[in-house]
Image 1: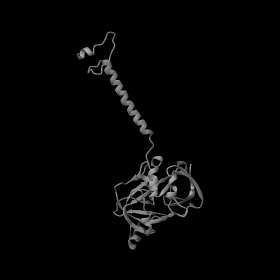
Image 2 (image 1 turned 90 degrees about the vertical axis):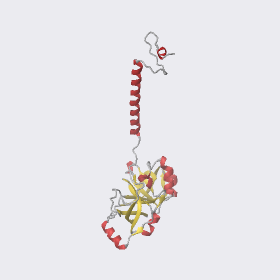
Image 3 (image 1 turned 90 degrees about the horizontal axis):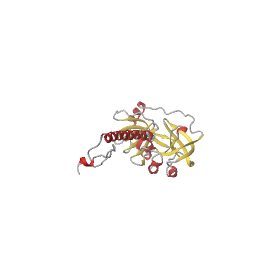
Length: 272
């Protein structure tokens, strides 16, 4: 049967679509052009609407693959060992970020034990930076090395960061509502670094020694508090059943520079 025979139309002006025919009537061509235009426009609008409906990603930065040589002072903050006065050894400028900085090792491991022999001293170490407006962390790649006394004195005077005066924190019990997170992922290593989807990862990180923290709700300031025991000891296994869910925590707040800490006990943390 010829193409002309298959596209013959009956009288009365009826216009039939024949899928296997390459010939289209003017009316069919107009319809197909309009349908294609409407479909493409609708798909673009739907894509934009879905993108706009997505929650904004956390602002943290993980300098993955970029290992820096850094110099810092090992400070004690409510029992936690942290790094203050960070400086690049090679003179390369560091990004602006809150301090002092928490520490971890690559993967899901804590690193405070690496700093134990150097409390109060100036050290040189290699590490990768993790930072966000909520705080900062150094993922330590190798054992820190103590600076020589003369070098440490010069470095400390050149990079002196005055420790804040007592501001009344730690003197009264407060009650905060938020979510227990692992500080490493929350600060930028993972996105999202919080919520039910991240709970399994947070449990493994905290189990490995990454500092646990409380991320408070916006109505409570939207702040990150590193969690410590009442005597300053790290909290880990006793928190795991309440990680990644809304909780109410009672404890005493302390502060070291931009770093906020909350001394509490497992019995003072209630799932909501």
